[in-house]
Length: 243
Image 1 (tube, rainbow, N blue to C red):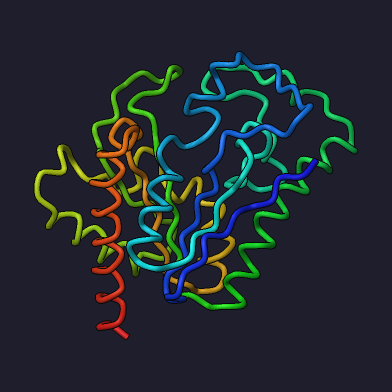
Image 2: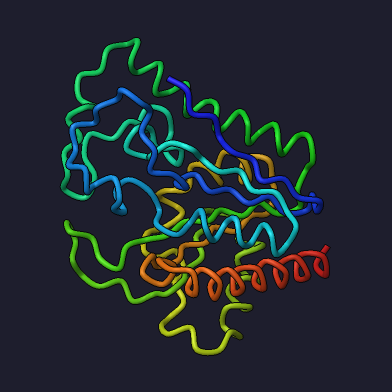
């Protein structure tokens, strides 16, 4: 089973974008046992997140590291022991049940490839800021309360970059709703990629969550990518002035 993560290269080493739910691809021959339509829904990937990552990378001339396999196959934003989901938003994933040791190892090899490659990118050209790009559904089938935030920032313990990012977003006109702070879930509960590659080494980071209905088409991607890029630049400036 092979699904190599993708690198978008960039001239500016100071920022490294990460999109660990960029793809809804399933390796050939692997049957997850889910309805075909599930692979185009939020359970399989973060809709619009890859497009935003690519657009922001082009705007800032920075690198982006993208997963190339669906999180239904292996979720790169979970620790290895939780990375093969049994269900997602009420959908059972029968193809992930009762995996053999060999099949489990093959799935986790994809997880290791993503994180080992990201660690190499950080080591080869150390960034000043690591930025995670995610999207979230306006409501979950299993928890249908509406999620009003158009955009949010997630963090665990390291608040350095978040402080500047939230201030920058507050200065943006007409976002269309409240800015989420650790919404629609808390980075103190789920933050694996940033915990491993940023918090663990003292690297400042941002965790963006964008509501997927806002980035489901090209105009939306363009608008919100520009907002994200401006927020990253403002955060860079704030961190530099504080150092």
